[in-house]
Amino acid sequence: MIQFENYTLDNGLTVLLHHDEQRTVVTVNVLYKVGSRNDPPHRTGFAHLFEHLMFAGSESVPNFDDALQLAGGENNAVTSSDYTLYYDVLPAENLETALWLESDRMRKLRFSERSLENEKRVVVEEFRETCLEQPYGDLYHHFNALIYRSHPYRWPVIGQDISHIQGATLAEVKDFYYRYYRPDNAILCIAGNYDPTTIRERIAHWFGRIPAAAVPDRPRIDPEPDQEELRHLTVRADVPSPVIYLHYRTVDRLHPDFPATDVLSFLLGGGRSSLLYRRLVRDTELFAEVSAGINDNLEAGGIIVEARPSEDVDYATAREALFAAVGEMVTQGISQSELDKVINQLEQRNHYREANISSRANELVFYALLGEPELINTEMDRYLSLTVEEINRIARTYLTAARRAELEYLTLPPEV
Picture 1: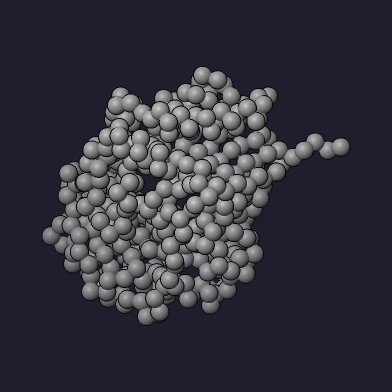
Picture 2: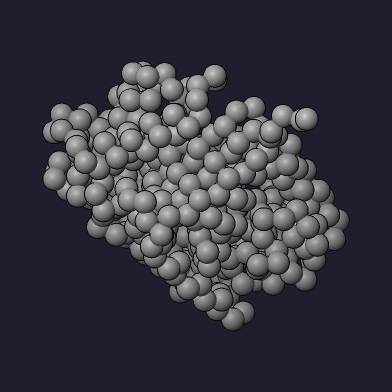
């Protein structure tokens, strides 16, 4: 059982505290409820750009990284479709440094045309290297738009078009900051060794006087409609070999069916004992690689399958075998021993996360984003209670053609 405190400051900042006096370090996480789903349609990639800008200096801190490293710490950040997370790890005795740094950039980021142009160049270069110059680099530009028709999930986190970042203005940056980077849109989590008798006072000192948002509420995002028919896209590109990507639409993150869809993805393609690996790689060698997992969106989730046919095999034969293997999961289902093995693997993964203080902080702040931080202690019970009958029902419900989106990367035809 992970013990934690949960409360809210007057300015709306959600605070989570997890004390572990056995640690020599402390982790400070700040999650902002803003991700690529909040990008303006003509400025896709903006949340990711902003992640970079948050390290470019604030009112009292000209260089965030230097200040933290002088305190013996390290930091990083990640932007997702639904949130942006900043995290610091440093010696416990230097916690005050991280509180100062994070509160300062929440209070007032330092804006300048120079820093904006610098970070735009960095992000544009990252876009070029990862999306334009790598084989399959534009996967999510095609795949997201196939899976989602109206929701902002339809563009990738890095952005849909490089010009959207190139055209970003300082006025747009300021509007984005004051709209989303405020205490009432943030979650602060402190985990590790700190003084529990003074921690609330220190948090109030650094964060309590930051005003809540003074700009209009975020624009409304309507839910993605249900998928009711098969979707297919073929992309011919300069790639070394064909690859098949499948997405089966499932449920939102808090839906009662989510744990079963998660387990189903493991059973389908989560390692060497999974059905797809056994049928397509080990038994027939039709595929060089095959895997399955769930996407990380909070809404309109899905199971993703990636399958790379072996060289010199007949592509049509391999493709047919892939769908036959998925169909086997639907028609024949799973056994109790198969379910037990996956649940044991998930328990081991959960124990590892509990042992790592940074993982604990990440879990706490994520569950707080969902509005249910207590899930850090209770969600595994939902997995442990799953039955063979429930997993088989989930397979029949969600692994259907009507819920499937297919993306094929095919090599370019030979030049004549």
